[in-house]
Length: 190
Image 1 (cartoon, rainbow, N blue to C red):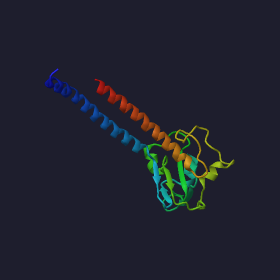
Image 2: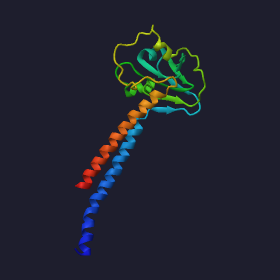
Image 3: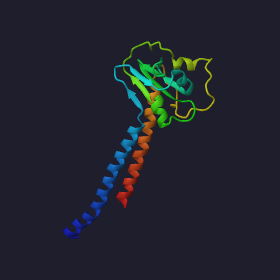
Image 4: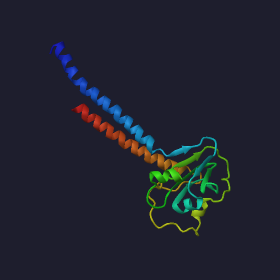
């Protein structure tokens, strides 16, 4: 084989390798974008999280299951809404039944984890403590199965809900990475 034949062979292989590389980069970018859209964590830094919502506290307690370590709620009479304060750990709420639709997420901020590193204990006394209310034997929980719950209830420090959500995100990212690798290998082989 002469040098010109060797160069010709390399030139024939190069376009498919370049195409596979470009495809791999594009699919990897897509995987990162999908992963970032699934991240619902709202970290407030070293300050407490203070989240006003457009739904009354009582309605939120009836409609959503709360998890976390600190979820203090205060009615806001001027707006008819509620303010959720998290001074340590985190607070997470999701519908007892069905799923948290996009417009509902805007009104109630459901399906978001509000987390702080403030570590200001104890949790402030507000009008409502949904964690304690929903743990009470007197609270009548809806009979439908929740659809958006983390796989296990959080520990006393509230870290479990976040780690479960992040684990689910990692699994999704891992599956996407395997798919990207399979598609890239198929293009390289072709």
